[in-house]
Image (cartoon, rainbow, N blue to C red; front, top):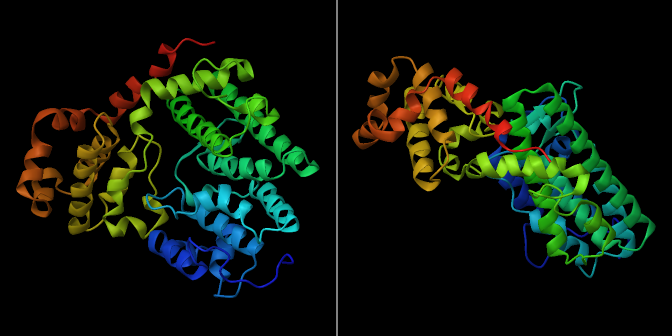
Length: 365
């Protein structure tokens, strides 16, 4: 099959393009009115149900995942863009090359419009969880082209991104801003975790050049990159492991999908997010509080949800005396006593000042 030959439905199982766009609209409807969009949002806005070849379908899936992986309800195309689409019978060598070229282009997509989980260094370089998304697709592209010139190009791009994150990490540590160091440690651990999982999925051999260069780079104790990324992983493992989740409970209040303003930042620092939620009508705030309490029950050890509640109670007009009109009495009791009340009562400044010192407790390599 020639590259670009019309074929609307390249998978026997998976998400049909029209359905995929429906899922994107369901999780982030604001994307379709985003002004002056970057390419991946524009592609979603302009898809009109036309037939797609395998390459165009791959690109559409990448665009959908880039646009939604910063939301609590990302589109479920991870395995397609990391693995399945590279191995289909109709994915010819020419199509694989075109998909690999798109993978290299995707490394330059500006994802900041679609996530609140970003740390920016003094130089202006930034990092988020999207680098992990790109790593996972790039490892698939590399595995599909091992031993070829394209494989070398993909590997070089992966190593360059790893080096960029190492440099950014060093810059943040030198600046000494504790909260940004904590946030970045979680992002780096996530990104290289994605890389490692897809390397395992493709069963890259222990002596594979890519595996030797970057595998386990952010695992505590790793000697790669002078042990610096392993140190970032150790900080994340010690302090942020319980916070590195998808906030599944926040899928339930549908109003949280209506605006970019409700994208969830890096936990556990959710006070400001809670204050934004508190500006909504009381019925919606009550809905959010009920979901947050469900999240607390689902994720023992996490304090992010309690900080979201702290922000809500600080900013909601009338505070608890008015909020109780919009929540069940059992939830009011949870908020008014016990461990949860103690966590919510810690002022944001004191909470963040305490956390800003934690990274120093993990010895440098």
